[in-house]
Length: 413
Image (tube, rainbow, N blue to C red; front, side, top):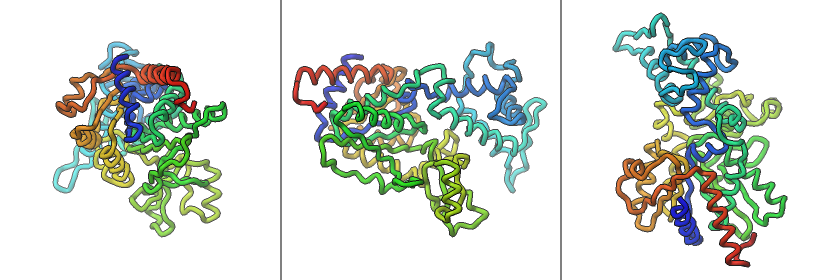
């Protein structure tokens, strides 16, 4: 792993006049403690099988247990022991719920389907509510305090802050794309502002597509890349390609009342703020609706409809930004991903066809065979760095420190 990380480091040193793109998968947040989809499945079953949960209605618990082939109090039909992970993940469960819901809906051309699992009769309303509360469970599992339940990670974001700091030694504009919905990158930027207070010369600025103000609002125009005029200013551009747990929306004053709570291309995406502030702005006539942190989040969830969602506002804009940056990038660094999304892979495959492109992957589980099965035989694909993200960051950090010692006076730090 050291030799492959060294090769990555050497290539990073050569791209100062070019461009670097970074793609963060779920593994980038793993070392912090954000649970994976498989871990969420076990957390879910541990919670609902005990029959004591504040997240799910009793009827939803009954429906979920029935669909998963489980019984209350941990008496599982398909698991030999309580501590055994389910063979499925939360994405699989969401897909199953959607399949059942679609089947129950029926159509004018076919008779209605009745859904029954054993003695359990399930209605469409049951499934819809189960899906809604399961999505809420996923959102809660992406929060920064979720590391307390995941069983891994130390809840410290410093490794990601150090990664951004190391990358800033090579480029002044850092382009990060992620399908993660959590707030780990944002937390790392907060940590870097503390570094500034402790005497670090560099200033880090987050550019995430949102304006400043009482309620920051989203526009793709807010990603406009500007040349830095000072050597100590580092702009960190963050494209959250599947949305974020802190995104919500409000609609225009002209929208019909019966559709005021429905998200559409005409809606305004904004950051969640306090209930008190939303109420005050609503009463002042500044916003058309009393939005709050309880309002539906704007995210692409791992449901069967997620690929069609990528072609809607604002995700098409975010994807086109990814494709556009890759057209000029020399190096793509992908971290903690098994490349599950077809539209993402399509853009990467176009990138790999260029002779001057390099794809580096950091993932402890992924193999070179896995990568070739996704993209084909490209010489531009480097050997997978089979390492956890935190360990790789530590190694790059040490290489950069050693470089600064060997070439005194060349670094600003």
